[in-house]
Image 1 (cartoon, rainbow, N blue to C red):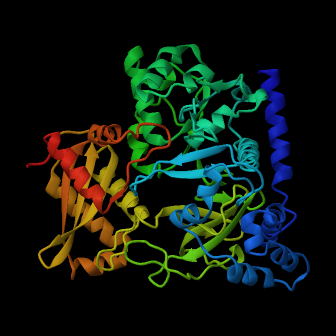
Image 2: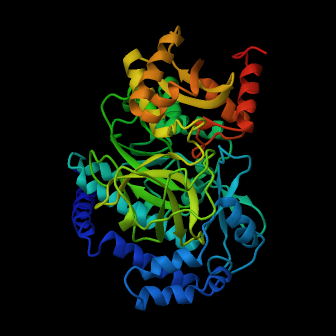
Image 3: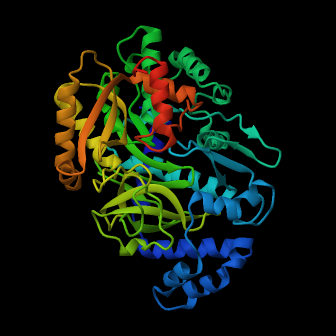
Length: 521
């Protein structure tokens, strides 16, 4: 038993017990968090325009609950385009004290899979500290996993992310959030961090995977962190390079996989074929806008919101009163604080953060499964719902249906996407499903998928008898999806294939498939 690992594990265990002793309710934590944000930003241009001093006084001296009503009346809601055009463009141009004190040095580039342009999300020093603090809390939560050996805590952490060689834009640096984070890794963690500074700086994704593969046998990896699709591709590459059966032949001490970005379920079957024994899977909700939530204990169905570390949450009921059929937020949506939400209902997430986002629509939809613990699951994206005629099909519905059908048919499905199309005077859904196997019976797949979606979603079942008159399924090799992403320059740790294609992306996708010979001209 490694002495250092034993000491570290014991420290994690007792630290975790202390951390779990909440001294305040989630609502109280959120109230305090908002007060800190307002106090810090009250002398910024944004804070002065929206009278943060008055809002702060309402929190400190006003009647219970009055502060939130005043906050809603005083500060408008923002989506990315609105806050960028009105405020953030000033910071990018070098202005100080716009939405957060000081000059912002780093901007995370969001992949923008559902939109034409790349988003620039500010990453302040305060946000970097908040993300590191939450990351440490997540490590401390490993004390709840009793079967981990003591010496695991001395093993390497492989973090597969974007390049740390950031783009220098004169007045700021920009790149993937994972690259910005890796560039700022604390000194004490560097001996455990893989792939190391040199490989982490590599911008060419293919070369990065090649260099990791060549050095993989020299590392003793206990933890891997990353988006499931890219981690799986890396493990397949390593297994093939060394002519072994599983990744455990190279990394025998691999025990934990921290994943995020997308649902893991579509990847699970293919992923586990690469293992000699099961891993512990820890779900993480880390976005460019902040470290929002993480799984805190074994077998938890949801992730616990981080309510006391630089993020103030609001929740918009995801209904037709608040969003149109394209997922665009209405001008004055209903918003709720964490103590006002209900379990089982879907909400779009608004954030106010220590990076200068204020009442900002992050674009994700969530559902509370345990309100007391503040545990949520991600159900999809506001723009990734498919509702041509009232079917209200969520990404969560899609993931579950694909998972169930692939189990029944013995298929390995890693990627899929769906678009809405006109069908005569009515509508249809066009599915593109990636599989590893050959000779798939497309008609059987189509019928099973349709049936599962009808079971999971009552609105879908109703519309399949009326306006949604047909579904079409095109089966493709999984590699085609990654080839399309490569053609778009979206290879890398933070890029995910969009589950719903809308607008211009549909034609772009079809043109690519035609050029590759998968669709007729």
